[in-house]
Image (tube, rainbow, N blue to C red; front, side, top):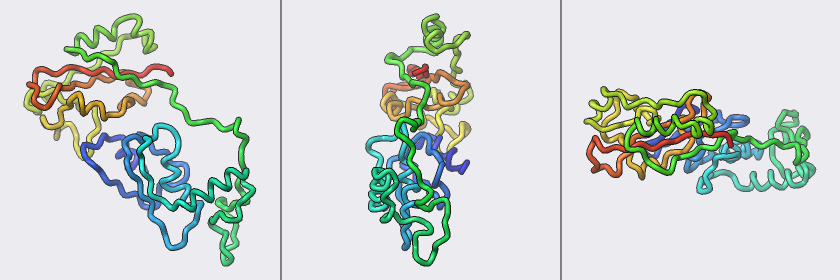
Length: 249
């Protein structure tokens, strides 16, 4: 599961397929769900509704979910679960679960008799304490970006005592990438910084497809400076910098 979480943190540079073999159900949260376009749940010959609702359909719930995400699953299982929830878990006769067959009477934690509803007022939604902002103007240089971050009102907004100083693109990496400013902070599937090339540079348009909370969900980094180009035809020394930061919601 750690490998799966690591893969979901990476920003895919092309359509990427991840195969999850019966190991992501129940209590596993998928972060960065906005990077997921399609999820496909395998359906076995014997369908148990409790398994289906805890599969990809369940993993697609919560916050940070794209409106256009598509989940292929067993729709009747979801409908029966909704019916059960709306009945305050009293109407369970149609819901299929482990232990519901005539041959298998063993009670498990999945048995519907163990289900109970909490009062709606007691349900605590999973919530992010921060708002992730992409600054509405580009900076011509890293020094001008740092000067902006050193303003007292900006430091107060970020709730920091010392102005953040985003790092410049390493000279060695710039040379490696043909003079282009390529950020090594962006996770790229199957690539480390030593494998980056000029093809990995960002344009303003490509940066818009990157989630605003990229690299900012930990406690250490509160700002991110991304070098971007107007287009792929822009000369190597004409990058500008896009500023991203987080602040308390």
